[in-house]
Each structure stands twice: as C-alpha cells, then as structure tokens.
Image 1 (cartoon, helix red, strand yellow):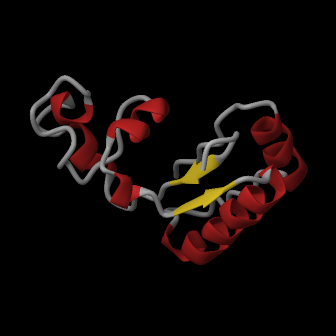
Image 2 (cartoon, rainbow, N blue to C red):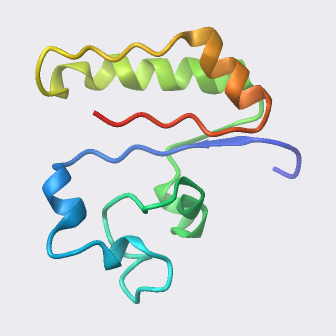
Length: 106
C-alpha cells in the first residue's frame, strides 16, 4: 500500500503493566521495545513495532472509523467503571481525513 492509509492497533491490558517497573520498554531505543507486548509511549512509534502487530489497514477514513467504532463496541464490557466511551463517528472520520491519529484509552 503506497498511498495514504491508516493502521489499526489494539492493546488490552492493565495500566500497571505500562509503568511497572518503569516505562523504558515502551521507548524505541530500548532493546525490548519491538518485542514488548505493551503499547508504545508515542502513538507514531507503533510503526516501529513488527508489522504483525497491525490489526487492520485502511485506505478510506470512513472504513477506518467503522473499524474503530467496532473495536469500542467489541471491548466495551472491559472498560472499568461506568464510563462508556463513544467518540463521535464524524469526529473520527474528520481527524483521520486530515492525517491525525485517533487514539482511545480507558
């Protein structure tokens, strides 16, 4: 895929794993970065992870937004507390259309 496109990634886990015993493994210059099964500190650093970490790839922002929405629905029962995330679909399409990232964390 050579034109503009979007990659979808999913990481599920406890926030405790992200910061204990420190976050060095989430930084690209750390030897364990590529193999660490946690999300990187910077969203763009997902691109430095092995390609098999990509869950899906999309050329169209609307299709990527559909996938993002489906992931929120798929994992909604895992979100802690009563917070029910539901970013506006149109806003997701807008940010992806201008080349920004859409990231959610709960």
